[in-house]
Image (cartoon, rainbow, N blue to C red; front, side, top):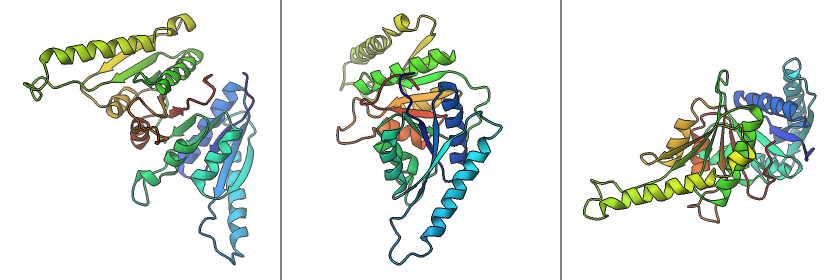
Length: 288
C-alpha cells in the first residue's frame, strides 16, 4: 500500500450515512488504512449574534462519538473523528485532499431535487475517488461492474475496477452502452448497414478497453457487455443490481469539459443500485 492517507467518511447520523460509515470502516480495515469520520456543522446561514452555535458544535461532537461507538464490535478499527464547519458539500470536498478516498451516504433529493443532494455535491467537487453508499442489503452480492465509453476517464475507471475485483476475488463486468440508429424509425434517413457498422466499431472500443487486463490480472474473469437498446444509466443500474460495487468515471466522452460530473455518473447516483465509486483522472489509479 503506497498511500497511508486515511479514508474519510461523512456522517449526519442518517440511515444512509450510518451505512456509509460501516462500509468505509470495513474498507479501511481491509486496506490497512486509517479511518476518519467527519461531520460538518453548516454555518452558512448563521448570522451574528449566535450564542447557540456552540450548542450545534457540541451536538456535532456527540454525533461523531456515537458514530465511532457504533463501530465497536463490528469492525476492529478505531477511527479518528473531526468536526468541520461551513457548507457540507464544500467542506467535505475540500477535506478530500487529505484522504485517499471519500465516502458519503447516498442521501435523498430535497430543496428542489437531487441536484441539491450532498452526495452529488461531494462527488462533483472532491479531488479523490468518492464512494457513495446507500442502504441496500449487501449480503450475498458479488461482482464489480464498470461503465466505459472510450474516454480517458473510463479507462481509469476500468483500471480501478479491475484492481478492486482481482483483490477481492470478484468477477468484473465491463458495460458499454451505445445508441444505434433504429432500423424502422430511421428508415430512409440512415442506411441500414450503418447500425451494424456502429455496433462493430463500438465492439472494438470495448475490446480495446479491456485488452490489457488479462496480462495484468491473469486470474480475473472479465465479462464484456455491449448494450444497444439502453442508455448508459439504465444499462449500468441494471447490470449492477446484484453487484458488490459499481465504478464509473467522473466524466465520459460526451460530457462538456466545464462539467465536473458527467451525466452518466450523475444519473447513476440518482438511481444508486449498490455502493458506487466515482473515479478521478487526476487521482492515483491504484484501488484502495
